[in-house]
Length: 561
Image 1 (spheres, one colour):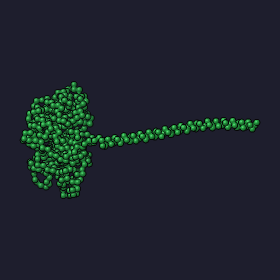
Image 2: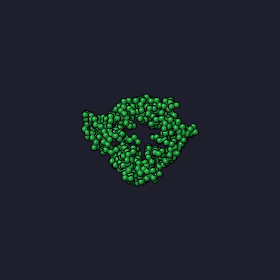
Image 3: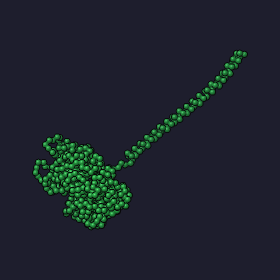
Image 4: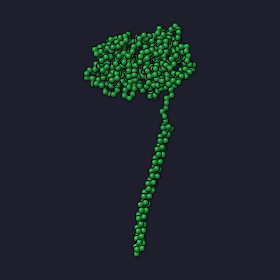
């Protein structure tokens, strides 16, 4: 029995053990199924990921294909290297140009265009909108402004603007567009749309009888709340200067006119201090005067003028300018010819140009930074350039002797003389011009006749030569071109951003003389460089002429706009 009991116990245990084994096996089978399902789900997810990757790749390639081949790229305008256009008015080529020449992108093709003005009885023949003086209500002849394409010289638009043109400035921003501001004579103030030439508005300023409008017309911050810059105009009547504020949107007068006592007034400019305060500086032959924009606005609008609340006064200027006389103390003496702004390291400084002296005032403190005496009698307003990298220097033309002139480059930081050259010069020779180069210096262009060591004198009507100078070649002039025509305006222009360096000439009869043919021409600098002649300023030739020309041809430019 013991054995049976033992067998029975063993059998029972075996059966029970079998059930336990079976019970253990089933969970294992179930777990294996879960793992198999998970593996299957993972393979499915991997397939989805692969499909999503290839779908994304397909979409990306489709977009690239569309932009590369299907959607056309913008057509780059093809600019002629040089062009010349003769503009003849209807009445026997009777036209007389003004000495205005501006470069702006009129047709929005990213190439600078040229705007100039002339007086004639009718519009030029090749204008698509041949408009007459009578059609705009002006007596004939009248002043026209013409916009010419920088790519080929074709006429974009042409409009009569005034009986006689006194001032033109095509840097006026109104809203999202640009325009030209026009001062006419008899007194008129107008704004034109830059793209179409359409007259936006025209008004007659009421700045006193027998008064003469003064230039420049000043663009000022918005004071009437329409989010468009407004305008400040001045007119002189004897020893009095009338001032008036005008809306940039409509030309409507804001407030009334005010009066300043400024005997002998010669010119003015606007200066903005670091604190955002706007001041107008007036100069006479021997003195400098300063008025804040807030003071001038209070003068015309009184204490009730709400627009003046946004205008500021600078504490430093307030302490320097005499409260009663508005006189600004300066260091040097002598007759003031010009007042101009010079970009500095920490703001805009002010250059006083006297007959034989330059003085630079700190634009924030109004204190003298330096003064340079002993300059040759200065002929015209200086221009700015960079003799040293990232510096702002001053290019001066002075009279050296009868029919001789000196070109001087003065360092803007110290007033030191950096470079000078003497040239023969005839009557009506154009002033100098500069172009910024990629090495953060400037290319200097000037007209005259280089004949060293000779006592020859220039004469009216003689051929004038165009020379080029760059500070990397201190011993070299490059002769570029010559002209026997009367050059009324000359401008160096980068027609495209950082490229297409050219110069533009406007020739024709003087405005005060008999009318005749007006010619506007563009020449590419590289074309004239290739055929230019190298002139050594001393006998030490440091390279071959061809190498010098090649280095000029490889020169790159940078745009100030």
